[in-house]
Image (cartoon, rainbow, N blue to C red; front, side):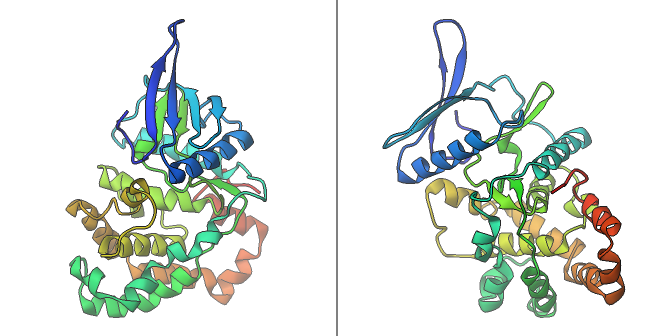
Amino acid sequence: MQRGYTAAARYVIGFADGSSAFVKAAVDGQTSAWLRIEQRVYDRVDADFVPRRLAWEDGDLPLMLFEDLSDGIWTFAWSPDNVARTRRLLERLAGTILPADFPRIEDDADEFRGWQSVAADPAGFLSLELASAGWLSAALPALLQAERAIRLDGTAFVHMDVRSDNLCFHGERTLLVAWNWARRGNPAFDQVFWLPTVHMEGGRAPWDITLAEPEIIAAAAGYFCNDGSSSRPCPGSPARSACRCRMVPMPERHQIGGLALREAGPKRILEIWQRRRSPATASRRRSPHHERAWSASLSPARRS
């Protein structure tokens, strides 16, 4: 099995009775830790968007057996139906509450301070030739302000790595795999970070789908621009590096960041951000009806 970025060993095995299973096996300390995190997810979540776990064996190098989804659809175009199907999946995740002892997105808040890193050392970002030094100077105050205001807290189930190679359409089911980054937090995170990959793979532009959660939009742009412009090695295993830096080698992926900055750029982000926080808007947002309506603009099924 070659699809995906994981460094874990992966196999499809057959049994004498004609059945089969997918095996994911650790190969080192890092992949062992990831598998144990996934095991916690399978222990806590019983839903058809999670593959059925068939067996788990812990040890120095743990392994897990899942239902074999090889006959599912793993390679697909981002048609309106597939986008809608994935958004319905994310709505279901948003309505799934994880226990309080689960890791939180906000524990990793420093990961989403990309514009702060760009501000401290803009040369790498400017080397991408996505924008001029003048643009960056004018845009940074708005982007930094939005990035600082990002809301990561929450109780919802957040996958943290939604993209096509972690999605499977299997009959009526829409499944996500690779749960080793799963966190509790703001469910808007998954949608905002997923949408650039839709555009990158031929689907609609992110700003044509939603401009809700402008703070997370700003943070996502900063995250990708900072990783794409950084000459520092990415921490973690080769799989982690590939995942975090997957936007670096492909010129069209740089372009996606540029398009996002131009089309839904800092002025527009700041206007939305300021409108949400003006005294008149703030008083309206205290109304439970307004709060529900605002939340529904991104995730209709979100609930506490």
